[in-house]
Image (tube, rainbow, N blue to C red; front, side, top):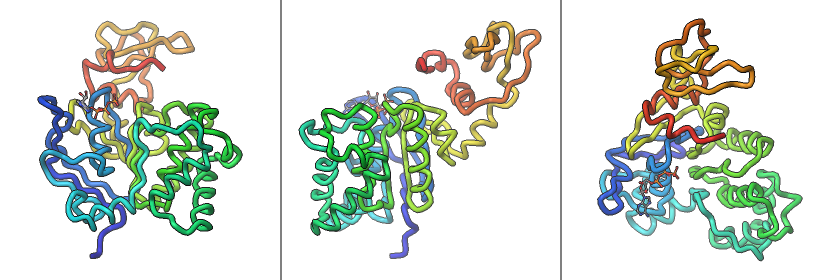
Length: 293
Ligand SMILES: Nc1ncnc2c1ncn2[C@@H]1O[C@H](COP(=O)(O)OP(=O)(O)OP(=O)(O)O)[C@@H](O)[C@H]1O
């Protein structure tokens, strides 16, 4: 079968928890490159990523991963999982294991049976996330950001064609986020990387494609630059906060960054950011959704 490397196809995908529609009629196709999933709390991002990571099944619609049905024959499921790296939103870490020991443990589960190759691979992925110096430190003694990187390391074992990362930058400091961006953008040349985040700057810096989810449906799917373009002419710097602005805040210069609404008197047009465009896309709920920095 000649399947493009890393293809994910979701057609009319729905998922309910009881009466709650976590996802409704989602059509998305992904190929290699880095795609960022943005959306407010409860938008359905984790549900979507869990479906792509074969952790749960959709209730409706069709899911094809790497040209296979991920809940089809055992051979299909195994073939997909061999090509998949997954960092869940919450990963329980045995605190007594070292960083190396934990990643090696996952490598064993992933059937890296040859000890020499396995050790080499564990070292490689620890180095990719800049944890070589912490390899022998117990996970319980690592910082939150370092632990997140241990989680990322296990997702990179075997250089998977499909990499699913649920909030990989959560808990990382700015320097670590910059390092992670470098690692992920390199991976995107070869693999399909799907990541969710609440950090619009990460998406702007890293993802060529953005999918905005809200209420379980796709609100935007396209190039990050096209999302930013939707906000041109709707963002200002002004001395006043704006009477009917969607959101506005006082910047370090003392002027107000005004998003949406009518421009206050004397306002100067400002270059929109991806966050501005995202807030405008979500509309009146934006105030509630703008998490404190
Ligand atoms: N196991 C579950 N049982 C019941 N409801 C669930 C379950 N998992 C998710 N939900 C609900 O489904 C909806 C989508 O949740 P999901 O975790 O996919 O959103 P999210 O976009 O990842 O949110 P967050 O940004 O807060 O992580 C929410 O309303 C959530 O409460």
